[in-house]
Amino acid sequence: MGEILSEIFSAPMLVRALIVGVLVSLCAALLGVSLVLKRFSMIGDGLSHVGFGALAIAAVMNLAPMAVAIPVVIVAAFLLLRLSSSGKLKGDAVIALISTGALAVGVMAVSMSKGMNIDINSYLFGSIISVSSSDVVISAVLAAAVLLMFVLFYTKIFAITFDESFAKATGINVGLYNMLIALLTAVTIVIGMRLMGSMLISGLIIFPALCSMRVFKSFLSVTICSAVVSVATFIAGMIISYAADTPCGASIVCVNIAMFAVFAVVGAVKARMK
Amino acid sequence: MALINVEDLALSYENMTVIQNLSFEVNSGDYLCIVGENGSGKSTLVKALLSLKKPVGGSITLGDGLLQREIGYLPQQTNAQRDFPASVYEVVVSGCLNSRGFKPFYSAKERKTALENIERMGITDLKQRSYRELSGGQQQRVLLARALCATQKLLLLDEPVSGLDPMVTTEMYELIAKINRSGVTVIMVTHDMAAALKYASRILCLRKDGYFFGTADEFLQSDAADFMKGGVRHG
Image 1: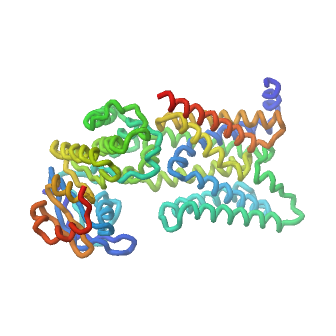
Image 2: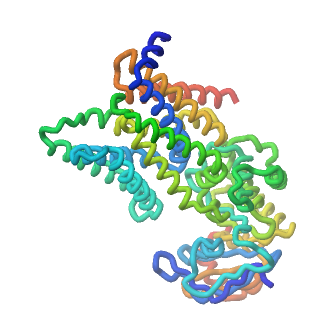
Image 3: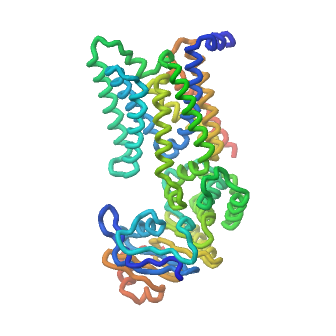
């Protein structure tokens, strides 16, 4: 174990991936609690597909991937939020529509660019090599923003997550906070996507919150537990991925599945003991 | 001056006018029940009173020093709320959010207000329990305590007894009446005509082709009452 860790820490590429991963999983977990409780889990999934489409098009057109993907995903996040809250189209149907649409456009773009060497596999399922040093900077800034927002607006985030109508009535600018959450979610997804893959990134958002909700009963404890679970499963998944030579994103999600099983059992035992 | 003065109000819902020429006033200490068939604009009126919806005509004026954000609102419960991981205390104290600007944490005074209202609703022993483990009646008490944190003057209740069994419903009505006797003005949207007649000092009955506003006795003698008897279930 010690040997594996020292090997990871001696490779700059892996250290970068570890730093970005820990920061992104922290953000994903904090945002995830609110998204899961507001029944917006699938938005994360939809956005990652949009991210895939944007990355693919950026690669084909030879543009900087992040510079294209971040604004596109932010726009998609606002759009999804607007559509699902206006109730004109059913939220889940809209997300399915946008997901598959973006995925198809991305695949078309990649397949039409014959002769170009685009590794579609790494876009879909993530790759440690793709984490650049500019990603480290962006994810550090993002993590700081999410943490700051959570501490400063914790009480308001609770209020709008628990009860939007009441929050509106007490004069909280619900639309603004929803947009802030959507914005940070979009950025989290784009950064995390490179490491986790666009098919797997939403696991980082959903699993920790769901795990914590099995066992903990207050909003504060669920939030803290999600952050801890998320960072721990990320590190464990990355070590497994390195030791067993398995893909990073999939290893992390598998650790999360195991964690969910553990939390479900603990939750059931706790309920039984009452 | 009246606490709320509604004059010649017109409201629309998805570009359809649902309320026209509506005038009534609510005075301090009143217990006003808003009744009416589905689609008569009850929910739209509630939104307008909370200033979440702009009138297309007429005006709603708040008086007696009542601020817009000082209305204690009890919304209808959503499905997402029923299994929400939050302690009773966390939910109640969030009612204090209206009186604070950008301060990130609750002050000692706000925490005290929350505890007082928890006691007032008789749920002190549930304080640390999780909201999702409570019965429907207990959850409504928690939401009432939260609404009381937001106001000392006016409660606006949107169908507070829907989904509760008859015994708990009666308890809930008695609790609301008690709050009203302690000096808090109550506006309640309800389908329960019997309760409205028993508790309300004023009744506002919305209909697609007009409205009635007056006391319960006046209501019983009006043709609005005949109209309502057909479509309203008696609780």
